[in-house]
Image 1: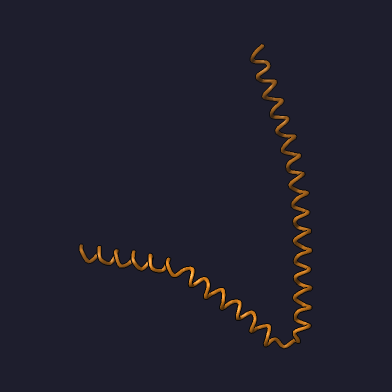
Image 2 (image 1 turned 90 degrees about the vertical axis):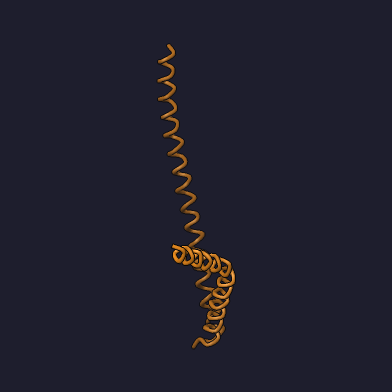
Length: 104
């Protein structure tokens, strides 16, 4: 029974030690991804000017799509809010009529 307790203790220590290394691992992974991106741009078959132009166009398109999506979400949210207010008003009037008839 002692051996089982020892193995559980070792396993607990192992899990605790991996939690301490998580921020360091995240930094290493982030730096690796960033450096890979930079190296990919440096060794790309297109010129830097053309690559930057393509990146700017794609970024601009993404921003425009984001603005459009945000505007659509805002309109849909306003419509939903209006419908909710109408339903709340109907429920409120039903409750008032029920409580008003009970007190008479």
